[in-house]
Length: 233
Image (cartoon, rainbow, N blue to C red; front, side, top):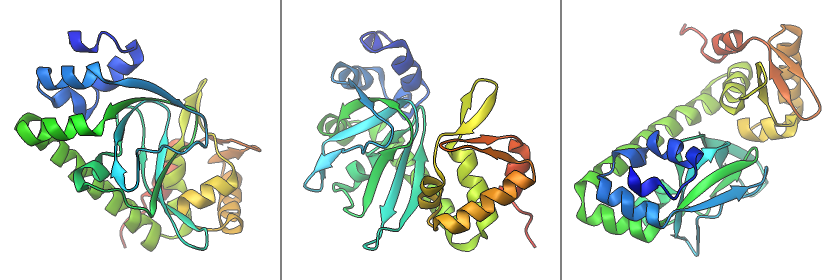
C-alpha cells in the first residue's frame, strides 16, 4: 500500500499483520499520514490519554506491552499482553474514556507507531469498513482478557506461572527467554515473590527453565505448555 511508504519496513510489516490491514485503503492512508514512530524503554509506561480521554492508539511494531490493573495496596494483575501487530488503547477509545485503574507498561524495549484517536473515531463514525473491524477487535480483546482473568483466579500457581512465561518470552539466539525478574513475574501473575520463586525453583528442578538474575530461559516450552494447560478433571 502506497500510503505506508513513509513508515519503516518493520512498521509496515506490523501494520499489514494487524487490524489496520482490514481497513479500506483510503482510511488506512489517512491514518498512515498521521502515524508517528515511538520508542518506549523497558519498564516505561505507555500514556494514551490524559484526563480520562484517549488521544492516541499504539500499534506494537516490536516488543511487548503489558496491560494491568493495580490495587490500592500495590498488588498488580495482568489483563492482557500486546505483542507485535497488536494495538493498545483501542478499548478505551471505543468506550470513550480510559479506566483509571488500568495501566500499560512495556516489558522490554518496544517500538510503536502512534495513531490519533480523533482520526480513528471520525473514520469509524462514517465507515463500516473501519467500525466493524474495531468492534470485532475490542470483542476479541475482551474475550482474551476474560480467559486470562479466569486463569489467574481459578488455576493453581504452576499453570498460572507457566502461562505467563510463555506469553512473556521472546526469541534470543537459538532459544526463548523471558527478560524479567522474579518480582516482575509475580506482579504479572498477581501473586507475591516468595510463592512465584518457589514455583520457578520447581520448574528449574524439572528442567523446564533456567533462572538468571534478570532473565529466565525456557528449556522446555512444550513442557511448560503442558503445565499451563492441565487436563480437565
